[in-house]
Image 1: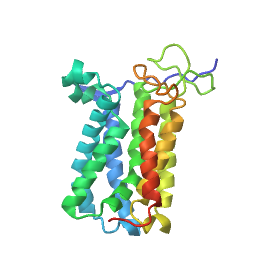
Image 2: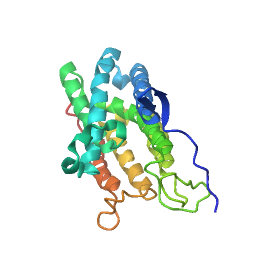
Image 3: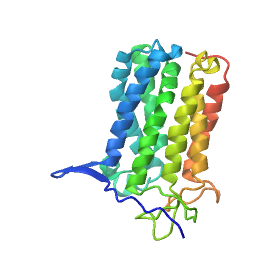
Image 4: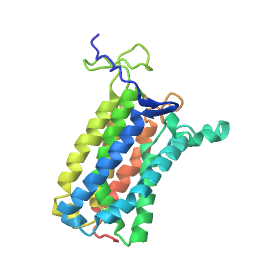
Length: 265
């Protein structure tokens, strides 16, 4: 059976005494910094975003980090490991041990955006559209980090590009993290940023955000067909994974924002 050897990359990129810097953390930093750069670039070229200043984006950065990290961690606990609430509640704050949920991070980011827009008198929907152009960058680096960690691997398969993951047993598996990096990162980035130049999206703030939610939800649901479901959760209704269950509300919300005729601001 053909397979691609798993790259021998240490999840710890650098150690300084007791301090370990992991690729997972580096991916978050890269995603945020490149996202910050892209947000400022888009505001200069996209007419719908010009009212959003570079200063406003800089002020938003710290709120975004808090929203993503806190929301991502709490989302992982509530959606995937609720037993921690009873057995080891202190571990909820152990973010260095891994365990982040995109859906939780998205909720945290939305709340942070709402807070920032209220304080700065900025259009929430215009700012959300700007984030939609940027978010795939972070998703790409996050999924690459998942691959390096050998986590969130795919189901058993005999495709030529299958990988034997260090924690997935001897069988060859789909590199589902790479599938997600390509679909949620590269493809979604291209789709959203191309759409940001079309009048249908620019004349009504919120539509780009809706397009992002729909396409992310569909991409995630599709890749879940190749991704190994969480052992302790299994399937819902004998078929659906937690990732698919959480993506359905995103698709429905995205359809609403994409099709509504007027913007509340």
